[in-house]
Each structure stands twice: as structure tokens, then as C-alpha cells.
Length: 66
Image (tube, rainbow, N blue to C red; front, side, top):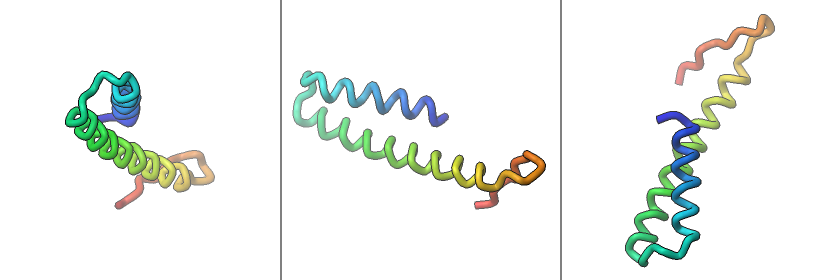
């Protein structure tokens, strides 16, 4: 899934949690899903940051081997 998709899903999940419409079990599941989405988004951003740091003087991006 793309970063933007994960971010939109996370935003929708937060809105649902803030609505007060979830029972405790649903809130716990939503919280766990949110933590997973946050971790995924952070990892994606880290990867993007590393790719940007690898930009050469010629303006090309070198593939980062992780």
C-alpha cells in the first residue's frame, strides 16, 4: 500500500475513534490498527528520507540497497 493510502486510512481511523461511537473492544482494535499504520508510515518516511539523501550531484537518485 502506498504511503498516501496508509495516511488516509490512519486519518479516517482517528476520526472514527474521536467520534465516540466505538465500544471498548472496537476502540482497542482501532488503536492497534492505528499503531501498525503509524509504524508503517514512519518506515516509509525513513525510506524516502534515505533515498533523498542519496541524490547525487547530477540530480539522479541512486537505488538504496536495504
